[in-house]
Image (cartoon, one colour):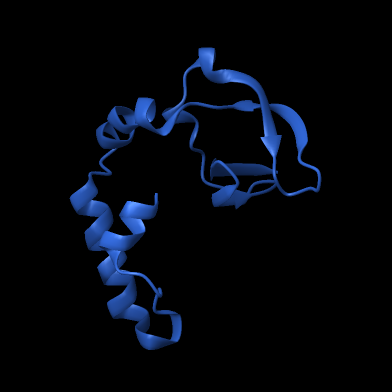
Length: 97
């Protein structure tokens, strides 16, 4: 199993060969013990962990600017319509994160 999370909020996950490799966001010094919130109480396991603020530059280098994320959020809503409409605006979601 592999998870990309912001605290207990799981952003992406996968297992076996079905996952996106997010390792480019991390450095070897980020390897340590991390909580897996998929269990109650959370398990501790080896993994990469880095503060989001310290990761933003790497995320932007990979092409994910705030403007691109907003555009993808809006395109997703336009493509899927009301059936999966996120209950928050992008601005409110950003404030929560």
